[in-house]
Image (cartoon, rainbow, N blue to C red; front, side, top):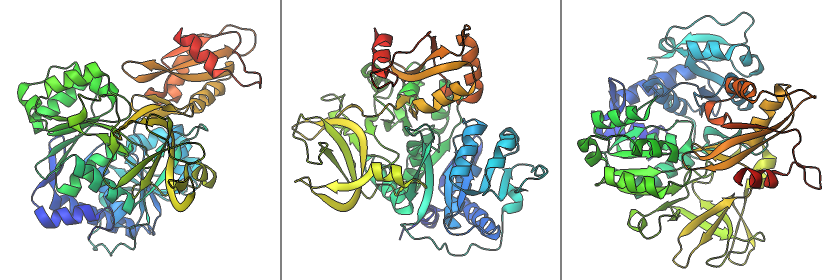
Length: 520
């Protein structure tokens, strides 16, 4: 019986231990070998004193040790925190401190890049380095060990965790500017793996390319859905789109999930005919895929079924469009995934009629536990489920903040977001976080970051600023500073300098007017 995340591997090793589980570059581990390593590292974490539900951050690029560390944390009874490897030191340290991480798994190079930022992570006691381990800096509150030194042959005690315990904290941008940690239980992750692998019709014969970051819910699901059915996962840290094409051809990839900007790039590549014919399904998440891109992909992959999906980190995955409906309604986000119910409700909680715009509310086993250490934001987003009469039950659902419309046949269509979050390159970006970094330069008096429609990125980030003092402001120079302080996907595409920024009657920046002016 699968109760905890690592039970996926234990079951697969017991069923088909010799089958390939995960590949990175030229190395492949079978399910038996991966489960052996997970138990050994899990036992090592227990020897370090990791207690039930304590957090282990994994700050690595995609490699076999990354997968091992994540599932070993589960096997040891802890909760893993995957950190996007493209984040800068400031963002990484914030996540580690906010989640009270006890153990950090990283590389020597990444540890050195974090530098003094780790001083704010008061909870950190152990750093595990893949490769040769340097000594801890003088005065550091943590010790440093090599990966090999942590591996233990003492045997792994039974995990104390049950299905409703914390399994993971995934960080996503928040409207207040600081990332928020979405707390997921073992039950959440297992229910998601079962649901998604079911509607994708995945089997042990599938070869799935993990192209998205494992810190992204859709990226992590490439592992869970594959392990749930005993499929083979190929890890890739691509630099160029042609790297994805090459690896798909090399490994005979049958399943590929990407965000629209990557799909647009992949549609422009020359695909070997054999690689195009091998793909059984391709899936889109993180924003609407342009119709021209979808048509091009369908011609490249004539045997593949296209799945257009919509999801929330707070509920893993919410809807998908049946491939049989793609030609009839390519703009739809589909219907609820298995084992989920999607409601469309008015502000008073009553359910909308067909054709009436309302808020998407997700209920079911995939609804997360809330936001880490943030009861206020949890109460705003995780609220009781409305019933048909508008009354509230005690069951909590995710109120998405997204506006949708349901048609007469029950298919859903995305309308827009209620907040100011920017969706770019598949990432959710907080305007406030971009603005705060801009303010920290001391070069500006006012700043507003906006998302502007872009055919490749979904939205591109435009930063409108007014300079501090009476001097001129070099937009290129400001952008160069931001590039050093922000992950690349958060760096504004354009910096617009104005002497004044318009304000609304209540004194706030008039974002709507600025957005209209940029669109003119």
